[in-house]
Image (cartoon, rainbow, N blue to C red):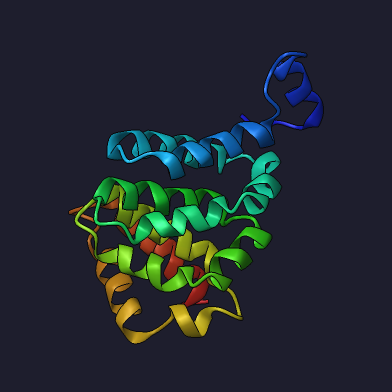
Length: 176
């Protein structure tokens, strides 16, 4: 559910933790933890906050987008999945997309297209859909990337979500 400042005040109450502080606490817990499962739960939680435009400025301020990108470089496939999920959830906002692009996120998202984890591939396709614009097309619409996306487009009988996302990407960025 999307929120706004007034709704947030009502939900937090007098003694509650303000959203920016809550998100900062999650980031700190992630950074301080050595427990992989605990880190996964924190990134899952942060990824859920990435849906709501109310949180976008906090996410940029607290470098949560960079944390998601760092997760994509981890050997833990679950952290990769959750990291690219957070990128997918947040990159619909142009300011977030700009941060992701400036921090080298496009090659990281592209590498997720080859993941054995279905959700990771779905998130990567969704993220590329929103990250692709006139200034990033040269980085995304490379022959190798387009070949992978076209393969997913043709995979309707095997995986309809891959096919649907790939077709939406191709329709918007290639076939238009």
